[in-house]
Image (cartoon, rainbow, N blue to C red; front, side, top):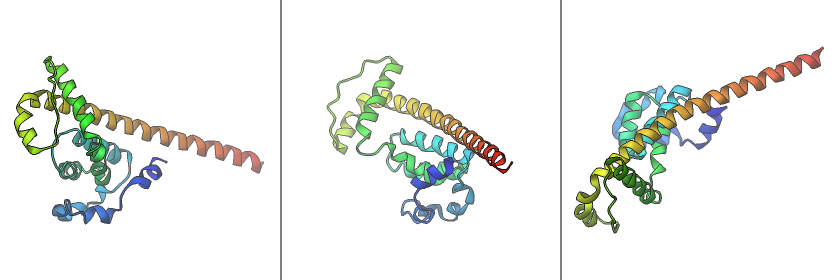
Length: 178
């Protein structure tokens, strides 16, 4: 079942409750709904996590956790999915979101010589912030919706497949008893 697959990849509940960046949520982290694995909780967590993954901001885990707590969806999945955009994947993802935003705003993309530094960011952000933020927001919304509906469909498919397997097994068992 889908729960078994997801549970294999989830971090320990106590590990998340004691995470240094999430500790300030305190007693809110003890809500059992934040740890349930059901279709509503998991699909909502995919929506939250994928949305926050594509929003360009530091410490994305904290707003992802806050949204998971507010919406009462699986906290671990929400926080884990934020890491889709990590230091390795950020450059190509943000390059794509910038070009998507430029296409949406119908502005020609600028050639930007990228350097990883706060000085470069402070000097260059005025040249590309609008297309970048528009592209990031559109990507976040599209991926969030795709994750939500995709996870609901996948969950339903797993449930139906398990029902069919059980039905066939019962039919075979009944046949052997007679």
